[in-house]
Image (cartoon, rainbow, N blue to C red; front, side, top):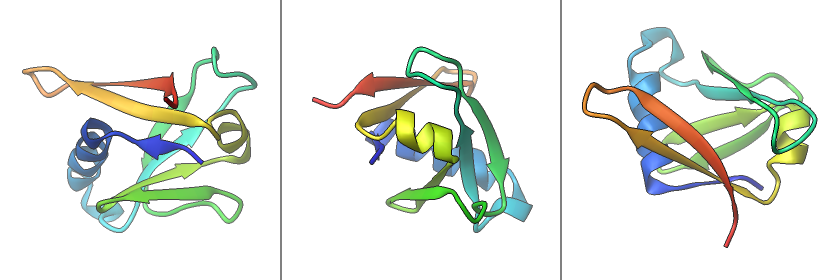
Length: 94
């Protein structure tokens, strides 16, 4: 299962806090076919019925079936720049 770093956890909570309708929601990741592919992230009010749910310290990430398969043994990390922009990265678990 995908794991979240402390930075990714903070970023997900910060992002979802900006959307009152998604207070109980999270970030949804929709995948492509491989780890090298681009993923689509969106803020949603809850998971789709087939989504895998990853929770860490109040941060919720929902993975569609493609993303769940590709990211099964990966780590989601994030960097937040001084202007508040977030860049997510997926790495291999140690």
